[in-house]
Length: 572
Ligand code: PRX
Image (cartoon, rainbow, N blue to C red; front, top):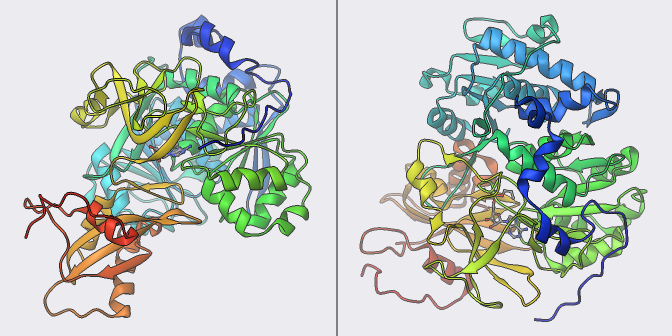
């Protein structure tokens, strides 16, 4: 397929020439920007905040925070003091020590960011949770990681089964009128009393920084561990791909529960000393445009689902706001439809730059830079310092235009360090030839642009969130009426995919709309709203292999009216 490329818009970009940079770049050259390259003392939160607070950027705004009730700004110096307070509280009252897991489960407020930075300064590994998680999801993650400290709100506490989590020693609550008792402490009160000075706990390159749980096609969510040296790539990609420059006002719309919200909502911008916008509350197209117009956002990083929803809200709404401050717009998380790119050209007069990466890869790897022509529908090219290829199942590199496994040559700084408690799972990502295999299928064209084709496994991407079908199926069969369940992603124009469940009921249950809704709510309450099936179809029996595995590809074929393929392993 031939697509019309969108030409480069001339400008002063941080990466002036992709080709030249690819030839001469080495990751170790990047290290000289960090103070640890001189002092030998490393901590990613110190580099992101204190390094600037102690420089000419001291009084520069680090954070603009906006939600329905709050409108606040904090300089780098303020961020240093507040994160130091949080670090003091966590170490003094939470006994946090190097390597302990500290989880945050709360809405996007300034306190969340102080806490994350403070926890990193205290040497902890931070586990961020989506506010939408329900009890089962919270428990799985705190249990697998043996979390020692949790920071949450009184409202969310009802979803924390702390009596079933023996490793959890301290719970800090953020809110009003908190009564301190036993393991429960009032974070704000303690922070008000805390010192603004704190000497960060100095870390090694491969000491833990972030623990992000993500879904695969089998088993429970897995904990992807990222380490302090990842900051090298957080910094460099934010510079080259987000093209962050001194005067920018940057807004990443992602929640820290997702890796985009930590890497490009915290570390990427702040390691570059750039003003960062954080917006709390629910998504509302009108509010989003207001944020851009009122703060003069220049660089904006969001996701296809959000762009599609904005598209759905109509072009008239765009025209009501002055969005002329925007100079660079980017997308991540799912395939960016050419239609959305064309819409971006029409309403913002901007090319939307797609970027590809994964929780496991820790940073962007395949991207569209400002300084290269964009082919709508393509994820772009591997960044300098990264080698990508399409390989077959034996690890042999395939020629252009052949579909296969999207693979990356091992050895970039932000690569996950391990899967928590599961080294075997970590090893299973690699193929002969030192290839990290992404689980995505793709092809590369003659000009070196990569084109996403789909997931090779059954992982569902719904509204940019990665959902493991197995997790949803496991929850479904906990419902007393459900005998068997198979879950697939069904293509959807706005959400990319929606979750569709096929269910066989137990004896004595009848198919009704009420039951269908009850089952939906059961998953919503047990896992998370985004994991609940939007569609449920009842079947007498589900297609299974002789060994009893639900054949999701057959369900998908039924759904999409496609040939079912080889059925030789199906039970009679
Ligand atoms: O299938 C790819 C899709 O999202 C997966 C990674 O999901 P997650 O770890 O939740 O994402 C973390 C932050 C990126 C990938 O395996 N994906 C991600 N970016 C793109 C994408 N699919 C198509 N185009 C993209 N730009």
